[in-house]
Length: 227
Ligand SMILES: Nc1ncnc2c1ncn2[C@@H]1O[C@H](COP(=O)(O)OP(=O)(O)OP(=O)(O)O)[C@@H](O)[C@H]1O
Picture 1 (cartoon, rainbow, N blue to C red):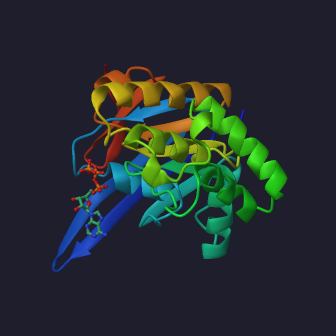
Picture 2: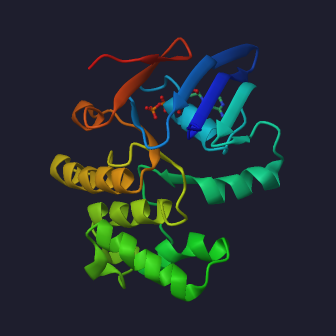
């Protein structure tokens, strides 16, 4: 079966004045379809950089990114954007929902961008909000929702276009422990039921333990982390 994501010898360097900062240095990883992988690594080790590269938001200095069957390294900006919209969902620590739209509309937006009809987009948005246990708040705007509810909507939005890969950077890092636990539970159930592959950066070892395996970053490389 084709992996959902392959990172091949990814390098990422930043030039700062006369110094070169090597953040990723030959990072390799394969995530199988339907597999959930936790990324647990110290602050500043390059987790966000890795997720940005895997999500085609940033280009590596060297190496290749393959999403599904698509070799993405040679895609131009238009091709990368199209690939991101179709195949990849993102969840960040902060929800980034559009404030003037309702929860339902926020989950509809990525689908409308891909050309789905309003009716179909609304139908799928309701199903996803129901999965995320927030169907009753569909008509509320983000400011009228709690932090946990906002993240539930953000997760529903991330999977609205049926991506094959979900990338999440501390998706519950901004929530209190109990809310984080519940939101993560819904996220995990949704990912499993959708047979989505996921790479989730977290500092929370309990949450990491619920995933299939954990990796970390050491000297710019991805290595397995024992639990
Ligand atoms: N555009 C950039 N220019 C220069 N340095 C950068 C840039 N982006 C990231 N870095 C540096 O790369 C390193 C890794 O950053 P990154 O945000 O990937 O770490 P992280 O593991 O996600 O950290 P945290 O857990 O604190 O979010 C840091 O030292 C950061 O300062």
